[in-house]
Image (tube, rainbow over all chains, first blue to last red; front, side, top):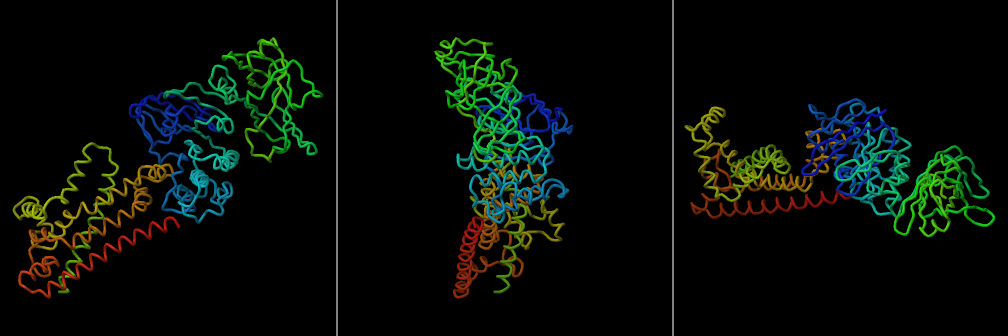
Length: 366
Length: 222
């Protein structure tokens, strides 16, 4: 059911924005594109921080902007996390967290301060002045503050881009816990594809103020018409369920559409859903797979459903299962190998997978 | 002499309170308004900084004269004409000290920027609520500076008082006028006491303001 409607057709300053999106009212939608593509403007329009002339924005039937109406940001039920956290310097962490909640009207509804404190690991920081927090800590407080105002939608404006890699690694598990904790829709603006791979259910690709395409993230990443599959860092994302854990061998078996994977470690409990990330460069192709002759753990029967020549390389799209009905994989091999193996679209081939990573490393360490 | 000191402090206090009440929203508007004529208002507010006090005093006299329209309205409001009364001095001080109060507050609001206000808006805080709970606390060093400068500047003012106040004991005879008269009458010891007192007071006020701003910066990062 499409519950967030965003139609924008106008300009901010001299930047033209033309967007028409219907999004379901749950899950994470990544808004992705190069800087200057209008993704942050889109988010700010939804929040009401930016006013665009010709727009219609509704959430769950409530009109936030139309030709007759403009609801000001403080009247919209939003949580907004800024790139630079934007905490109030004159308040402590506890006071920052409580700022939105105090203004909620009914402070009984929504998450409690205690729940949010635990969720984001803020127990020891509550009485601290904001000036004495690290970048990652600030962003955790900003996330908690936004959620405590009990929003109907969470808007994240590149929440990780101002952080160094260490701080990013520190905050990512908290973001993943947050996704499981809340069931409101999240719009996550980013220019980092790894954030999309980790968090997003759906992807809106923007360029030059327009939506280029929109769809489930798993399909988009492997779609050979889109730039993702052509890039050097191309990867496919698979969603699976843990079906078996072998503590003795330190391996877990994960079932995906059209096959099963072995991964090292214990990414969760049996029955848990996990997301696997396989880099296109980590998939070799072979006519046979003999476990007695090769150390590779995962060799899966696939069918070639597409191939794009890229200079001396081939970008091959595979589908799991002999009939090619399963989940899609991307493989990047040399044109030389493609010709030597006599490969062709619609042929059957084994995908030999050198490395499988969890895109969602929230489980126990691998 | 106590009466003179009391009147001077009363004038400075009343003027500062009025300046903060009206100057703060004005500074907020000057710091944030997108309208093109904002700087025209800004220039008018800054004008007393460069104009000789006698020029301001002269125009105030003309403006407040009992036979002028404004003078008539204000005269009826207060029951007597404003020139050569305490209320007239307050009005003159407010105008004369306006830039000293508005400028530091405006700079503090500008330094704060729009981001904290945007954060407040996304957290269900109305613009008025955000002004009181976010903008004012974040600009407090500017407010303190503006208040102290306005207070000190009003105490030291001479020209405007001379033009529109004269020297009526208990009504318009403030310290700076009294010093001037003491010197005119060759009452040196009296002039010394008052001038020395003013010097010490002004120094104490500026020092206090600086210390206050410093402790606040420190407590914010504690």
